[in-house]
Each structure stands twice: as C-alpha cells, then as structure tokens.
Image (cartoon, rainbow, N blue to C red; front, side):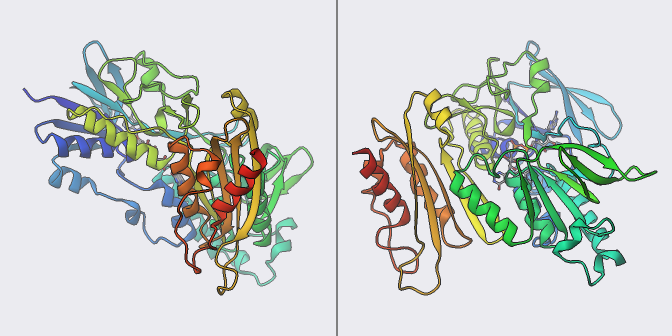
Length: 476
Ligand SMILES: Cc1cc2nc3c(=O)[nH]c(=O)nc-3n(C[C@H](O)[C@H](O)[C@H](O)COP(=O)(O)OP(=O)(O)OC[C@H]3O[C@@H](n4cnc5c(N)ncnc54)[C@H](O)[C@@H]3O)c2cc1C
C-alpha cells in the first residue's frame, strides 16, 4: 500500500516538501491543504508589488495550483484549513473555508508548514481602518489598492505637497510605518517612491537591530536623504481615529501626536503554532515548533519546517528562530526527501539576511551582538572598515562598509554585517563570510581566502579581506 504524506500550508516550506517527495517517490500520495487561494508565492516580493515595480500578484507565484495538480500529481486543495491533528489516529481534520464542512484525512507522514503571522502590537487603535500589516498576498493587494486610491485623490495631487507637508494637519498622503525591520524599511521605500510623506517610527535606537551599528546608521542616513522622517527611540503608544470616524488619523508617541492617514505595522512576525500545540507537539525555547536536525518533532513522523519552526544556529548549535525564505525552502525540501526515503537534514541557519533601502543594500549573517556571543561562550571582538567597492581608478563605484565579529581567543569568525550603495556588492560579498561560518573558519583563514578580483568588482584585496586582515591584526 502506498504511503500518504500530508502537508499543512502551501507556500515555500510546504510546496518544496510536497514537490521533492513526489519527485523522489512518485508512488507516494501527497496531499496539501492550504487555507488561502494562493500557493507557492513569493511574499518577499510584496513590497515591490505595492511599490509598483511588479505589476501583478500572479507574477509572484512560482508554480500555479494547476501545475502542481496536473504536472506534479500533487493533490493540492486550496481553501482548506486544517483545524486539528490527531497523532494517535494519524489523521487531520480539515475544514472547507467556503462552507465550513469538514473531512478527515489519514496520514503516514505529516508536515506542519503553517508559516508565521504578523505581530500586531498591543496598543489602542490597531483595528482602525487604514491600519495595515503585510504578511499575505491579500495584504499586498489591499495595500496596493490603498496606494492607488490615495494617489487618485485631488488633495494628493496638489502642487504644494512636499517634504514639509507631513507636518501639516491637512496634508494628503501622510503615512506612518511602525517598525524599522526589513519589512518596515522596504515599505517605507515603497510608499515614499509613490510620493507619500513617510514617517518611520522605531522603538529601538536604530533600525535593522540585527545588523551592525554601522549598517543601521548608513541605512537610517540614507532613508533621511530620501525624505523618510526616521524617528528612532520612539515608541508608538496609540493610534487614534478622526472625529466621528473609524479611520486612523494620528499616531501618538510619548511626546507628540503625528497626523497620518494610513499606518503600516511592520512589527515582526510570530510562528503559527496553535495547531501543533493543540496536538501536543513540543514548542521550543524560541516559541516556534521544536524539531530535530531532520525537522521531525517530538511526535514520530510529524515534521515542521519554515516560519513555524525552529532551526539550529550555524555558529552556536542552539535553537534559533530565523523566519526567512531560503530556510523554508531548504528545510521543506529536506523533509520531502526524508519522507521519500532518504533521510536529509537540510542544514543549519546563520540568520543570513539582506535588505535594500532605496539606493543602499545591506546583508548580515551569524552573531554580531556581543551579549548573544557571550551567552554562547565566546568573547566577541568587532571591527568595522570602509573600503572601495571597485578599484580606486575604475569609474563610478562606492564604499563597502564591512563589520566583522570574531572570538578573541580563537579568532573564530562569529558574524558580519555589510552595507554599500545598491549594486556595489555588500550582499554578494556576504556569501564568502557565510561559507566561512559554515566551516567554523577563523579570521586568520578568511584573510587568506582566494576571492575573485577584477577592477570593476573590487580592489585586489576585497573589502571582506581587508576587514579580516584588520581584525586578525587586532587579535594577534
Ligand atoms: C513582506 C515580506 C517580505 C519578505 N521578504 C523576505 C526576504 O526578502 N527574504 C527572505 O528570506 N524572506 C522574506 N520574507 C519571509 C518569507 O516570505 C518567509 O520566510 C517564507 O514565506 C516562509 O515560508 P513558509 O512556507 O514557512 O510560510 P508561509 O509563507 O507563511 O506559508 C504558510 C502557509 O500556510 C498556510 N496555513 C497556515 N495555517 C494553515 C492551516 N491550519 N491549514 C492550511 N493552511 C494553513 C497559510 O495560509 C500560508 O499560505 C518576507 C516575508 C514578508 C511577509
């Protein structure tokens, strides 16, 4: 009898697992249940869809439901929400969203790929009209519609709208982004590029707190150059409606009340774990579903991958929650391979991430925070350097700022953060450092890496090598 592999959630982790399992074992019955209508979509592209650089939501879809069904022979059911798991009976209960009817589905192997949901801060007014989050395709659609509606208004098109407009009570198109993480920053760009007056509120003292201080500073400076009003160390206390209205009209901080007509909450995500918890599946110290190296939970033959699950940190070997697209694809694919008969781990994660803010790009990987490093038993030392992005004599180019962190005693590389002008290579340069982290390399190793060189791309000593040389020199 053929085995049945049931997948809950039809995006990066779920569809990677389903596709790989079916490819490796065509006899396996693969059933995917997805609450929404969209599957295999690139949520990462949503800010660029809202910005207007990508013209349709369909363009964000890698493989359509029809292709999964007809070409990959996967029984994909959209509009079906899994509402319960019975690990003893090895069944899931599924509710059809359209009419509330339920069905039972038996499984031999089960994958939870339920993803994450946007965190809404516990302050007054988040349920007002004009307050948005960006976690799903439908959120993206609503935001793009808002942008189009707002821009059509006559008051938006008045000629005296300019950077000072955001301070005026009757200024149209004045919006707020709450949160200085990557979604907040990408959305600040998307809105400012559409001529909105954007104020970005960040509770901490810098945006992109997981990156180095040098990167955060470069990004904040650049956002300000592009007329985003960046308010650091500013906690939003309340969102308030206008008089006799249910629509947001102002954002309240400890010091002021800033008029706005729209608020985008970019205040992080939390793993969707309710289904797992109800089924007695263990939650780990990070709050996401705990798994072993094969992404198997404490319940035999039940796996969890992607934004709903923990991973293991490349540097510390400890559980980490790093909800990012490659992890979801990689771990989903590994589960598919395991279920099809070849046990596969899918690897650790270093928390490698990239972001673009207008004409600046940045990347981070590993451990940069000294307190976090000390907790993992290291004695972190950090060095930051600026270097030319191309040979000094080569036209154009800019500066790459590289921050490297290593362990004082051993020189083991712990993490890095890089920032440059967009197109000048901060993100691609980070890949060498990720490879070094994977190998537990030291800065003494890294300074001798045989990196490619030609004048249009870097100096003979690439900025990564310069940073490694300087930090290695400090440690010797
Ligand atoms: C705006 C935005 C920008 C991003 N940018 C980047 C980026 O630049 N780089 C990067 O690496 N990552 C980025 N990410 C994160 C990336 O999109 C996620 O890491 C990735 O989508 C996670 O995939 P997943 O399959 O684990 O979860 P999800 O994509 O969240 O998919 C989970 C799916 O499960 C479904 N589901 C949930 N519960 C049930 C249930 N009970 N029954 C049936 N179906 C269910 C949901 O409807 C959903 O479709 C971004 C995310 C957003 C929102």
